[in-house]
Image (tube, rainbow, N blue to C red; front, top):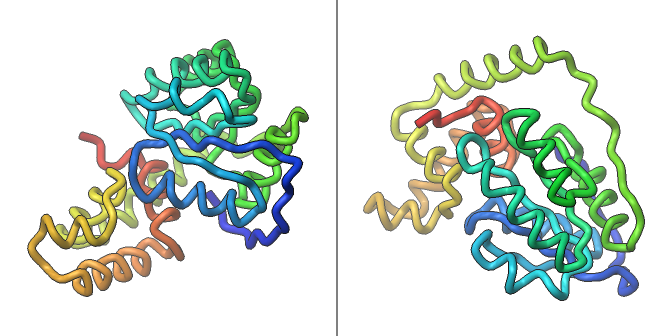
Length: 220
């Protein structure tokens, strides 16, 4: 997701937004972006959707790449039935998943190509009880393939250790947890993460994770 600065005053008229994502940095980063945009935000992992949803005015379901897609429509349906207005971020790997999300009650599909400002505005509009929309991504499929190929080439520039650290970030693990499991210092992991960001030409761990997901990496 492209980064655009977001700085807004809180708006008490809007309801709470529920961010449904696997535990880890991605969900926390999205929640922080929405909170910075003036929204009241709560996080929930997919198994906790049914219990967490009744008080949410709107919800953002983060769709993982690959096989995890099939769980997304169920989460969307549970939230929609609770009365929440639902957006799906980065939906799926194919048109079947997209259709299933819409049929399950999703009111908005948000591509990873959206800027943070578009993301916050769209979710805030849903939380305020109005219909939201985003500009359609008009990038031809062949250009998307070129993007994915370029992303894979950048990933190949990483060392084996950096690829392992990035795989942990994609899995939602935080730097401190990676350091503990690797028996190295937090400073070492942070240095490796900085090197990853430099090589991938991105400015945040969220962007690095998004680039890896766009490349379909890791494949296994």
